[in-house]
Length: 316
Length: 244
Image (tube, rainbow over all chains, first blue to last red; front, top):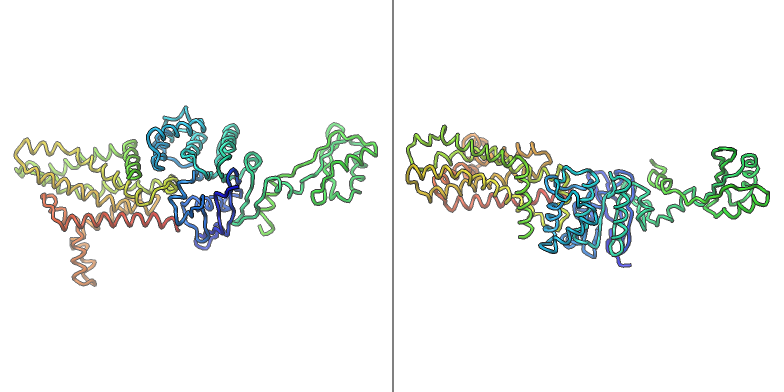
């Protein structure tokens, strides 16, 4: 996999405040990196350094091999950037705005018209293309920002909260667009919405208080959840107590929780030791005792648990 | 140059899509006329020239031009579009230049719309049109100097009111540096050559020559230097903000 973006020990201090501290990671072609963290963790500051809007206090960032501080123009040419809040000129129409951005990027004439057409189509802006941006809804404004970012078909896309303020349908569209474009690009998407990660990301970097606390695939993170491989069992209420006694005797079981009871059936949650795979064992055990299982489901684990554990930490 | 031209076009369009452009032009024309007729005695002088018209321009510019320049950077900061602008592959200087030129062209348009004065004196008598052209250029040059100063003030803040007040105050100092009010602040402690230097910064002294149609090299060099230094300061202010 060709490496397209590299951050090396990137650090930003505002006075005494360490906004970003020693952040390093790389993103390759075809990869969508989810950049996660609570509000104020340093996501936007990191992206601003990568795109050349602010200078790092120390450390380096490069895009396609061009250092963003030493060769800013070459680096910026290769990035499409959607800044936080998708700023745009309210007095312009989406078409006028895209023409401005295109010309600033050195695209002119027919080529510019063609690219604007593609960007407008991909972000479904046709119906508002000639209206002043300040009269558009939040969803449309965000898509104008997105259209601007993809206009020059850059190898690297940096999107700061691209789905913030969109309704579920629009979110779905944007995620689909990101997936489609990811084939030959390196894409960094910041978000604090965890469902986004499952939907689009190949890899997740989580940052808290300016530092990276996790860098892994979404499945690996789910595995860190206490709920990973937990077994959810539904069975008749009368035998629930007996079943949980029996399951507790297994040495791979850490805990059995009795959850709700509805219509004469009880639900048990069986938590494994170190994420061990329990499903078959539990089902065999109960079968042997003649206890009928109505439903058995193995949990994948929950990202939001992991996210909370990582970003709040023991010190917070 | 492509980038500068693109910035100029966008900024000019921005002036004309808001009421600012029309308010500015109407007020400029109304005041320029009122000053020339009532304070300058345009008719009473009985002379076929436009000196009574040009002589008030610096005072008009003093509060009108900072109003044109105040939005150049402050608005970009307030709305966050500065982040978009500064992450496009353009140099800060190109953007500084583009914004300056747009505002300067805009004041040029307002100034050009005073042409009825020129028609009037030509109808009433036989003025020296070379002198009038030179005075127009001089007036436009002073507007340019004020814009360059106002743009620097605008780059310092995201509040347009602050940008306006700051810009007007600095313009006032440059305009008035030849009068005792300003010079007295230096006389007490500074050597004579410093006082003379400050006095030579006085835009009003230079402009009084320009209004008579006299363009001398010292004035041209001074104005060009002032504008050039402002561009550099403007670029520096914007770039320093990155490293904050």
